[in-house]
Length: 386
Image 1 (cartoon, rainbow, N blue to C red):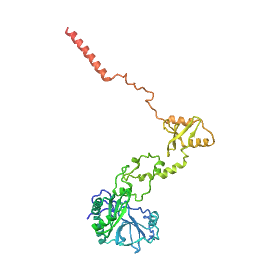
Image 2: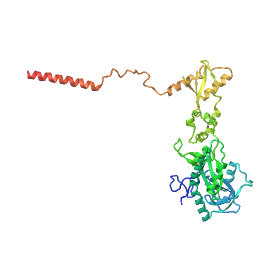
Image 3: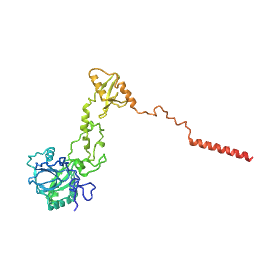
Image 4: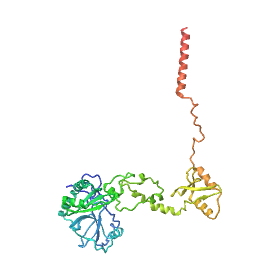
C-alpha cells in the first residue's frame, strides 16, 4: 500500500522530493540544536507531535514513555485517538509553546497514549489511502451544490472516525447542508477547516522567482503578515506583479531583510529634508543604504541631473541649514575631483558619427586593381599580336 507524505501530501513512491524514513519532506521538522549535548536531563513531559500539512499540537507524556524524534505515537483526540509523529521533545518544547502562545498549565493539553502498534499503523495507512478519493468526491458534491469554495485537502484521523476537510473561500460560506451530505456519503464525522491562500500555496508547492522551492512548502510553517511598508523600507518598486507570490499575496521573503535595512537606516537623517546651498535647493531622489550614498536633484519632480552625495556630507549640510547657514555648493571641490577620476573613460564622446564614411573599403580597391591589371595585360597582348 502506498503511503502519502504527511507534510506535503505527495505519494512517496512517485514523488521526487527527498523524504526521510519517517515519511516526511521535513517541512514540519524542528531543528533540535541542543541534541548533541550529552547527559542532558529531559525534565519536561511535554512533547510536540506533527500531523498532516501544517498541523502541530502539544501533548503530555503522562505514561513516561521513552520517546525519540520520529517515533509514531497514538495520541488522545476527540473522539477516539489519532496517529502522529514526534517532531520535538525536551526543553525546546517549552520555547515552541511560547512561540505559539500555549501555556504549560493549559488543561486542554491532551495525552500521549502509547507508541503506535503495527495494527495502529496499518489502520493509519488505510486512512491515508482514502484521503485523495474522498477529496475528489467532496469537490464534486460541493460543485453540485453551487458553493463558492474549493476543497483543497482531506485529512483522516488515525482511527478512521473523523475527517478534516480543508477548504479555501474568499467569502463566508454556509456549508451546513454540505456537512450533512458528506456525513451521509462517507459515514464519518466531518470537520471543516478554512485555510488561507498562503497555506494553500504551501500545500500545492512550486518554484519561486528565485528558482528554488517555495519557502512555504519547504520550511516555512508560521506565516507573518507582510505589508508594503517593508517594501518601501527596502526601496523595492511597488509593482504588484513583482511583489506578489504564487498565492497572489505579498511574498514572504520581503520580510527577511527588513531588520537589516532598519538597522542601517538608523544612521541616516530625515531624507525628505531639502538641502539648501548658495547654488540652489536640492531635493531627495533615492538612496543606497549600504553604500551610504544619497542622490539629489534640483527639481523635486524630476530625476534629471542627479548628483550622488556621501552620507557624511548630507549630515554636514543639514547641520549648517539648521544653524541658518548655507554651504557654497552641494559637493566639495575635492570630492567632485574624486568623482571625476572614478568615472570610466568614454572613448565615443569626442568622436564623430561619420568617422567611417571616408574610409575606403578593401574589397572594392582589390576589384579596381584587378580590373586595371586585366586591362594592362590585354593591351600588352594586342601589341604583341601586331
